[in-house]
Image (cartoon, rainbow, N blue to C red; front, side, top):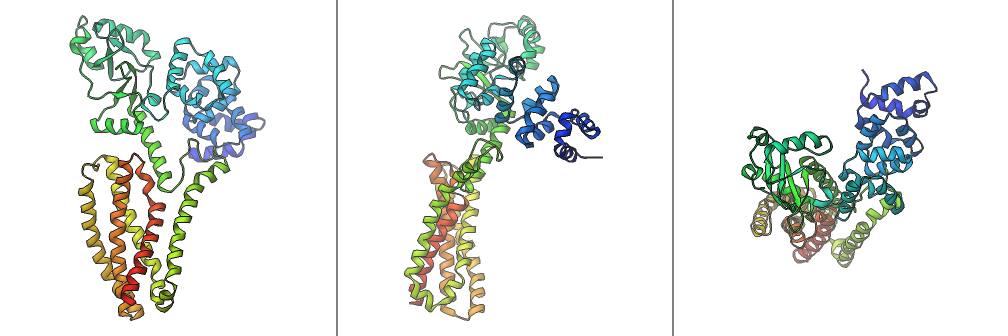
Amino acid sequence: MLTVKKILFQIETNIEAVINEDTALGKDLWEILIVQHHADIAMLIERLDESYQIPLFKKLSKDLALGVFKKLEPHMQAAVLVSLDLDDATNLLKQVSVDELTDVFDHLSDEDLEKYLKLLQREQRRKVISLLHFNPESAGGRMSSDVITFHKDFTVRRCIEILQRLGENKIITQRLYVTNEDNVLQGYVTLDKLVLSKPETFLANIMLPNELQVGVDEDQEEVANQMHHYELMYVPVVDKQNHFLGIITADDVVDIIKQEEGEDVYKMSGVTPVDHSYFATTIWTLVWQRMPWLVGLLLLQSISSTILLSYSLLLARYTIISGFLTMLMGTGGNAGNQATAVVLRGLTTKEMSRHNSYKVLWREFLASLVIGSILVTISFFRVYFSSYDMLGSIAISVSLFLIIIASVVLGAFIPIMLERFGVDPAHSAAPFLATLMDVLGTVILCLVSSKILG
């Protein structure tokens, strides 16, 4: 039996025949394609050459096209939208949630944005415009606003009647939020409690207070962390006057975590994060992503060369130093990166903070003493039995011990310091720390060697 990957590969290879259905193979592959999952068809479209993406999408039935459209990346959704005639675009827009439309509109030109906003119903258009004012990485940019809310003076009977009439066009969650006449959030009632309560019961008598509500401008990562801390599937979003605006769901949290993890991977590698997928990013953007860090690290790394040149006579007399230079730098970098990884994880899970940072640094310092002692013992015998130079072995071992202590303490200190000053601590990872430890390690090795070897 063919796997989905193999099926999609065959369709991609014969895409022109599939779109035109001008061969027996093309017809067969088309019939196979239209029974695939929406997500798989969306993935296929995004992989295709631009000249085939829109024709294939337009060939799909309306129901299938809607499902596939929802699975496409926002930049691809925008490209599809502008290719449709107004009637098809209108039907599509009416069946897509407001928060999804916001992401699509971020990728439209001002002219196209104005055109498609006019196609929306007045209420839907108002919600989209309000969402566009929020930072995409804030609670307001992430929230879903198509949510049913109830007045605190509604009875259970009336709430159930409203759910039956409007539920198909709104997000129905396990928690139904309750507001007053000014749309100020009052609390929530669970769906099962609503169903099991007597019909004439007022919501004010059965609603519960919210364990957590977040401000519309709050950072998405902080919201995700708070939801995880309180083990919540939903959290209401409010403005400064406590007006209810929407909700963030567990699905949103998953997307937030994936996005934040992706950004952290970029930052830890010294690459500027981008909003688009790899193949939707131009070569020049890829270059610009990496150049600032590479240039900065190049200049920082050059300090090591300057230091080594100033100790060139010492290095010429004691070749054992240069022979084990890479071992010292590599070990220091590895030890520092391990400490950074531990602290980054602690900062992410909130186990570590500025309140216990001194305790963290003290523990890492103690760990570095033990790690350094073990590695120094191993390195001493390794160096001595390869050179039989006692003073050289001592100089390298002492240098290694100091380098490991410095690497571990700095590896722990830098992300804590960055977090305290409001900078993403992920910037402290591999390239920066490794380069910094190369420079510091070179200084330590040369100073120690000059004191011991003369």
